[in-house]
Length: 256
Image (cartoon, rainbow, N blue to C red; front, side):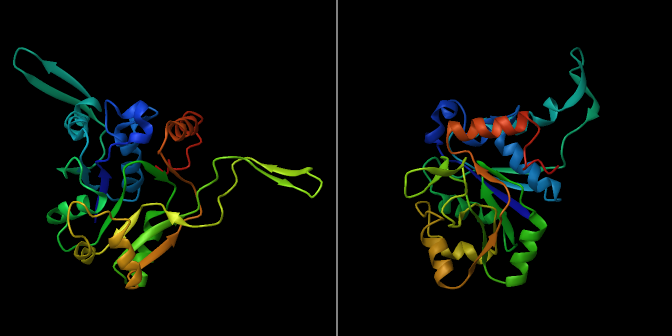
């Protein structure tokens, strides 16, 4: 089963990092967050990826073009222009990189990769968010309900600490970054049947609006509730948090 990753946006809310590279190439540790996302899927045996490129897509192309070389021990014979591989430590990935347009919306990017999916079930997620989601359980849920689409629903934590105050203005409890208001939001990590392509009109279609709304109204969209770790990298603050977790060896999404 192929995994589609949306990696074409401008990343304007983290412009400190994205003026030279696309958002999925912003590094956590010494690896792009795109690599972290792919490692999650790869851990569960999913190694075929279709990546939707847009803004500075050539950076992602060059990354994978040089990926094998950067992750192997080699000897170069400059006289004969030969190369001898000593150690191959790369993942068994097959990566298809598709230019889906600079200003194409999320739904339009999905529509453009239809020829590379065919009539098969596929997974899709955003190129800027990680989670400790158990992919086999997500797929089992999708297959069990038999609908066209599954979205992973998450409950993001609040950005600020919360205080519980009594009638006399005394602080009773203080909770640092509690869960949000209890609402479930779109966390990515979708599973789609090919019939979803019929809900997308063209480049200006926003996946999260008309297609998902019509799927929901037709009873074809189910939510897989994930109560574990989930974190998008929307801002520099988010990036710093993910970096701190990684450096402390406390990254929940590192399931490999």
